[in-house]
Length: 213
Image (cartoon, rainbow, N blue to C red; front, side, top):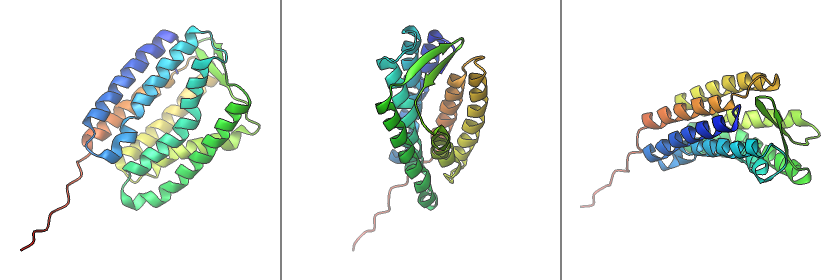
């Protein structure tokens, strides 16, 4: 989320371009879900530009924004981390994946029962989702996304988890005070960090063929 339609459109286009570079440079098939994450984040910001243009409300752009931000990311991130993580970490990564799936189910149910509403609040865009008990859902969402990165066992992804957690805390505070929305800056940091991670990954060596006499 950015502070205006123009900012969302520009930032979203830039983040999506970084995402395209991530996908093109990926050397391991298992890394593709994470490498494609900036493409999803960039699309998300472009969708929000439309939400700004329509003045918020409950229209298709608001629904698309909420689907990406809430249930989709809650599953996409832990699933992508599980695919890319070293084998020794995969068993423990099942916990954030299961948590993400449960969180996504709760969010999808809330969105189906009551429409998501977007509200322009100065230089921020607020989204209202009717959750009877939001605290467990928020904890589950953070564990599924940031927690999966921190538990990945990969140095680059752990760094990404630290940056994402710190950036989300700052952006949340600025957004809550309705000062300015800076989530697009967090998405840009995540995308550039992922590009560095992709560039540093070594390709998987093909299995050695054993000759027969």
